[in-house]
Image (cartoon, helix red, strand yellow):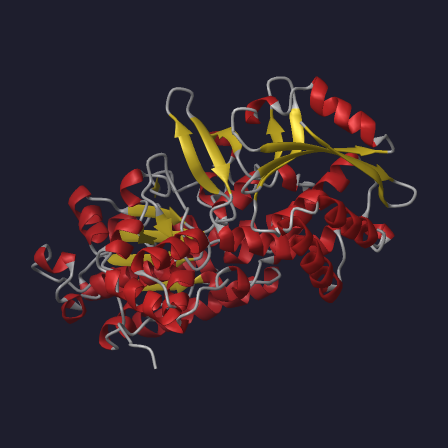
Length: 521
């Protein structure tokens, strides 16, 4: 039995339960101190699912409830002296997924009822917005203390219909109506905190709440509810050592493995390196590094948006964009980039302050592998067993350096791809090619820029660099000629490795590879 370093709060998102149960808690209360010192009143935070938003919301609830005993030894204990108890209205909207308009109205009734049982209900309060307004005012009148409103996962009712314009509009109007009293309730409110995945607040949902402070991309709040690299290597160092011991790794080896799988997130220009807290805690508890966040379910709205906007997977990683390209409300979206970023499938990898340019990329191995596993059935073959059998033979051939055999595997396999999954364009075949090679845990870059063009794919092996060019219904010789004429090999000539160019021809009638030619530089 491996040594247990800490009790890990797997599946526990309530601050009270974590503290009373003596589970591992990474102190985030300094951010509450920051809010209070600055006099912040209306705060919005966007983060991907399972990134600690609900736990932070629960921490705020405990603080405004005056639960002093829960905060012993934490940062806020040195700051707060009075521990005033405020009436707290905490609404969790995550229970309102997959609802139509009538069901959503019913859910709002359901979450308002407990507070009306405490503070009462006026006879004229016949709509959710009137009921919310009435509860807040009576809470203030009855307690003499201003109320706190916490709305967790505010956008949950909207995400699964983001691709359905009519339904989205109907549900958006209901939510807008519900939230509309918040601004005029200012005299009765001590604090208001809202969380979500997407940036609906920028438009209609919170159009009346124009004093909402969106902290989602501020450097100082980059690690507000996740686990930073600093926290992992200091307060959680013993946890990493314990996991390493269980896995037969040194501390440094284990830390590197955790970085590869769960690190890589940046939520602002100069963000700390942050880890996915859900996957990290699951790995520590199970004493096994695996795909936990992605394995917990890929939201259907992501896959539907990828289909709707015909996302080019080969250029998904390493995009150079300006802020307005991804910091958008779903109502404004003309492509899937904002949703992929806000949902955690892409993150900020680099920022150029001179040009205010962001480079977005896939955060880590867990997300990359998860995306590939989710998407390959949509492009290649819906049957997992057949996919796995092909990939095993394909991978073995590549690692042996036998590109001939690897391409033969690919030719045989591609002939089995269902006709309805193909669109017979060069880009489609290129995407299939990219997906196959990306499964290899090899450093592969696609659509690589040269001085005057782009190589379709570049694969880095320990001793060899392969440059691929794909053509549909054209010869492999034409593909090789383009590699030469466009100078695709030039960036790698000083590398010291063997350089190999591979020209591949796809036959759209045969629906597979027609021929290939491999030539050393």
